[in-house]
Image 1 (cartoon, rainbow, N blue to C red):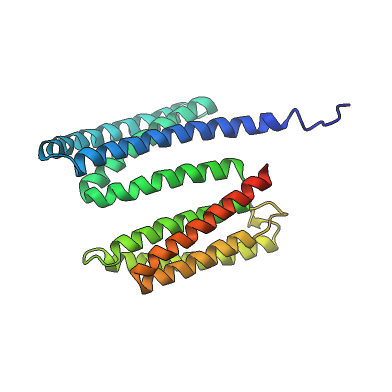
Image 2 (cartoon, rainbow, N blue to C red):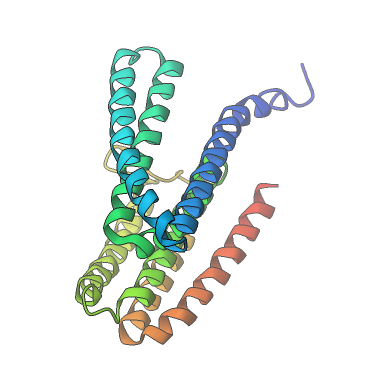
Length: 254
């Protein structure tokens, strides 16, 4: 009998998620590079470049929709083959990204690109968390990551004549959602990590990080609603908390 029977199985369990995470990370890098190129020529470019890229984005929009349709068809056709089905999802996801980013950029220009340039790295980070970290850590950092994006939007748009009221309503709704998440987390903790029949957290998971994430996020959002300047400091505070929590769980994983 081997001295450590689990030593040969652990690398196998990690290999699949690690490979998928690396592929998603590379795709995110390509997406971020594409957004930076669009920003350079469509927002900060010369008049000729802006006009040219306005046409390019419209072509990319329709091409993205076509690729999305192909991805959906491939996913349906290859439904019984998991590896091929993932290829279909990947093709569809790429088409959806290019179609949505083109539509969003054409509609909101600089604000859209600034938002997407923030969202893409955050999504890349969250994918790494959900693939390699404990579930309670993943939930907590996901909440904090979404809150950072919400604070950034509040700081940019709360003083806007056109979007200020809309952003304020969304911020209030988000605070309510945070309260609901905290309540559901308490229910899940009482039922060994389950919400109904769904296993949301491991039975032995500590829900404290989720409570802390919800509480800090709610306080930060309230501060942002009171003062746009406070949103800036709230963003830095949450960013420090995210960094500290990520370092703690990384050490714990190692």
